[in-house]
Image (cartoon, rainbow, N blue to C red; front, side):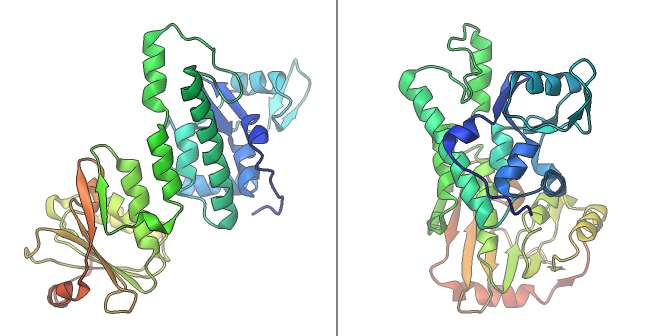
Length: 324
């Protein structure tokens, strides 16, 4: 990571927002500086989690788009050589949409990342509050028109922009208090569910046990940053996870310690057990499989009496399964 300290003043951040292809974006080299990375290292971190960044979250600029930014903005520090008639770019930056920027918050770790993420959240919250209070569609860099007559375009913006409720959810996720005894997920809250699950797994100090008959590669990706022993107890019904996917995951994340056991057709519900039989033990009951969490209305409940699940786990751990 870079040793450069980054100013998180909202006006400074706003000046790093551009409108490309009709949407507001920030560029990789600006985001890298904000988060304290070199641009190369920043993009490597994103590439390791590329499954999180769909094309509407992250895309590479064309030379024409980059030239447009370089000619119209004094804020962009671009790697260019030549004159304005014949600019040559050493690399074409990647642009991150608002949703892509929020997704970065689940990828980049550490105190600086959390601090800068909070600054970005507050910036977007301020802008959205202004938008709502004035009933106008105004961009943070004054790049959107003050009036938009095209109804379909307005609808598209509404569908892609994160709402104030979403912002509240994301801000709360930086606080451990989000893990209440009962968490209610509405239909379509996949992003919130993913963040909640990652927050749950992060609390484990010794081990993570997952009882879930319907697992997939998405289940594993939730565990890619978990540095404790992981046991997945599943019959892998419908074969959503195959051997090749598992091998690819192990190859890409060799530091993740995962073993498998069968449920032997004994389980219907789904559970997460953190720090089994330790003082820090926590048990969650899931209303849906981890791979589907957030797709439909579901609830995550925390057990009040963890010992109730101990006899079940002791029995299930007998059914060893080395590979899917």
